[in-house]
Image (cartoon, rainbow, N blue to C red):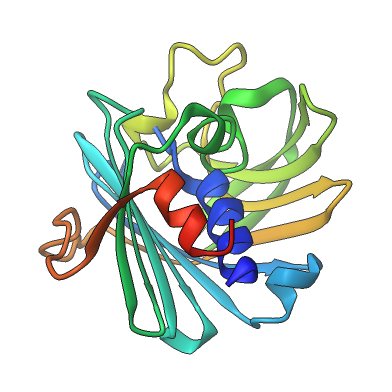
Length: 219
């Protein structure tokens, strides 16, 4: 249970405040996540899908071959009012009252915690059909990252006026290095087709606060 709690908080930190043409402003981006973090590595491949339109986003994370699915729902008009659902081997929770310390500071790669960005438009690669260029990032908490970003995808949530440093593009590859290890997230599919029901919170989940959820997961 403590492993599930740790993973849920870690993954929430990666996705919870994701508030950033032919330009794509509606659709989804599917990522594969790889990490040398022991807790994450033990559960194998992790898939992350970011669904978005001009008003909201929902980030779904699939682990353990579908045995654990977490989804975070965000409306751009109120990015701190998050809802997270989790289905962990039949245990289903709808989590609310997510505190700032759990909900902020990360988004896709801690976008609101960026201290500086150095762009290299000569260093390019194609990812999922989009030409991307390199961005080297330093965070205020000491983390570093290398992103490959495109200007052909525009998610409103990533354009946060409260960020000290704006990321000039949408990341399709992220490699984030910290004292805990390295997390690499790379896009495997980009689509303009937004599945129906992407932003609908499902029924049948036990409603709990984040504090209550943490207690259920072992403190």
